[in-house]
Image 1 (tube, rainbow, N blue to C red):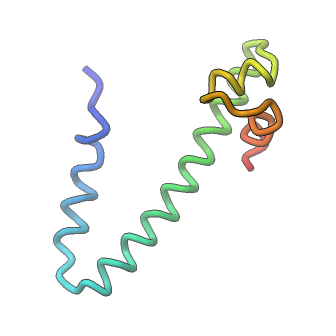
Image 2: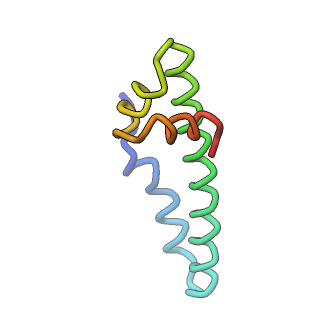
Length: 80
């Protein structure tokens, strides 16, 4: 059975809550945010490229990816 996203983020949540110094916790949250943005960008790129490899047009990919424009879907495919 696939682990839920809540379960996946539970260790990070616990780690953040264990940081007693609130300034340090804030910095760690911001670091995690940057890491997540990079992960998100990579994942969106892989999805867009995978759909393209399946023969889908950029317009179709945009629809699959939440109704974004074909231009935005193309940008995702380039990692932007």
